[in-house]
Image (cartoon, rainbow, N blue to C red; front, side, top):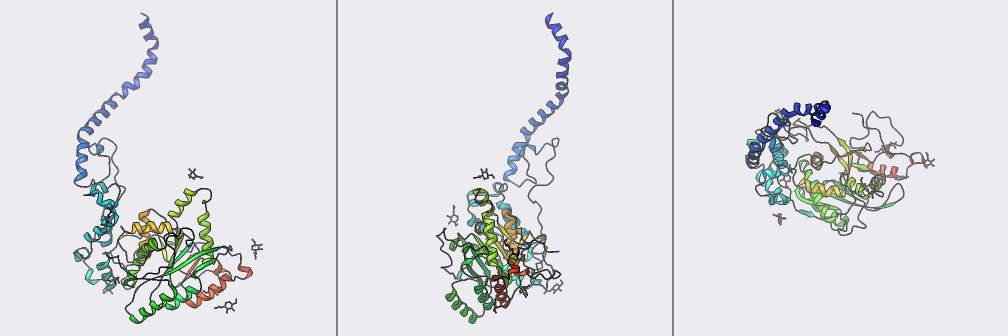
Length: 458
Ligand SMILES: *[C@@H]1O[C@H](CO)[C@@H](O)[C@H](O)[C@H]1NC(C)=O
Ligand SMILES: *[C@@H]1O[C@H](CO)[C@@H](O)[C@H](O)[C@H]1NC(C)=O
Ligand SMILES: *[C@@H]1O[C@H](CO)[C@@H](O)[C@H](O)[C@H]1NC(C)=O
Ligand SMILES: *[C@@H]1O[C@H](CO)[C@@H](O)[C@H](O)[C@H]1NC(C)=O
Ligand SMILES: *[C@@H]1O[C@H](CO)[C@@H](O)[C@H](O)[C@H]1NC(C)=O
Ligand SMILES: *[C@@H]1O[C@H](CO)[C@@H](O)[C@H](O)[C@H]1NC(C)=O
Ligand SMILES: *[C@@H]1O[C@H](CO)[C@@H](O)[C@H](O)[C@H]1NC(C)=O
């Protein structure tokens, strides 16, 4: 009696709470059935897929057979499609897949070999050596310019020995007293005059006074391959004995071999000068306002450093700055020295700092050395650096004071323009002396000039 009246009294409330439950019942049943189905059919099949072929999309194995649940993503978050018919894209695609942290477990026959990076890159180099069936991958091989042919047939080689290895540039052990800036300048045996001008102007070695009046240690090396002219090769050895700033490797110093200088320099750096804070890497026909560069770098290094050490360390691991070129396409005109045929590379280039002059941290150089082991050589050196940065997830910083294409032609002449730059291309040895003179002793009017901020008009 009491119960009945109680129920009647609360019927409204009970109805209010239970009605949604009753309405949702079919949904519960539906979900339960779906889950049972998945557990029964989905998982074992998914586990099987792991060992045979790669799944088309990365979806949790349980979802593979349920068309009723949310559709799995139409696109996987790594590229599945291959830019077929382009040699570099094909071999790099295979290497990228081998190092993809998710795919790696699917691909490795022997997981321990994957963790051994040197072994892996050697093996990749052998297995995908372009010497095999090159005509199948590059049907136009016979018609390519000679420098492209030379590149393709030797692109798996990068362990060239040193011919000249200067030992006194840095004290490799000393962390305290390591150079603030190591300047690594690409040059060729015959460019003796450029090297002389650089040694006496912007590439001076020793304690250099910054604009702010501090003293910082700067070291300099020149990066060279070998030439066929035995006479000037002999002169180079004499030059090396005099200055101790020549690094030479045993490969032909050609335009398409310039990438080797980056890769081999990172290796040299890691052994001979591993504690340098920053690296300038550039050409021998630029002018660098080194004292201003030092002030800029010290400010960047100090930024956030004193208050928060870990943030600063992270910043330095990704620090690279220059004239950043984005969305560039390969040059397809076969009469230029930059010509890259479609049978070799397809697609845009990743963002890269122009090779005329770029600054990066020592810690990034160590990471570049490591990642370069799994990026196939590319004939254009600065693009190659961009490809390595992309795989490190590092975005180069664009700075308008790097004028790798000189001052814009339509820009009005400013009396203090030369005091607003960090780097300008291109300058002859005579202009280097003149600019060094002018910027070292600025007129009172130009003493307060600040770095350019205006972006280069496109
Ligand atoms: C990696 O491979 C190299 C060369 O094959 C070998 O010397 C080294 O011991 C290996 N390292 C590991 C951790 O297996
Ligand atoms: C690069 O140097 C190697 C070794 O000297 C040489 O065999 C190769 O032809 C060179 N590559 C190019 C593109 O000149
Ligand atoms: C540094 O920053 C991180 C996060 O940005 C913070 O967790 C940490 O406490 C900071 N350390 C110091 C010493 O300020
Ligand atoms: C450049 O391409 C044109 C047209 O494809 C061809 O006729 C010419 O021989 C090529 N030149 C060189 C130097 O490969
Ligand atoms: C800047 O330097 C160049 C040499 O590279 C020189 O010709 C020019 O006169 C300089 N500009 C000024 C305003 O001094
Ligand atoms: C450098 O400047 C001084 C005056 O400041 C001048 O006498 C000298 O000729 C200049 N040298 C060059 C190479 O321009
Ligand atoms: C340059 O800067 C200093 C200090 O900031 C200032 O005292 C001086 O007047 C400035 N000179 C010119 C020419 O602007």
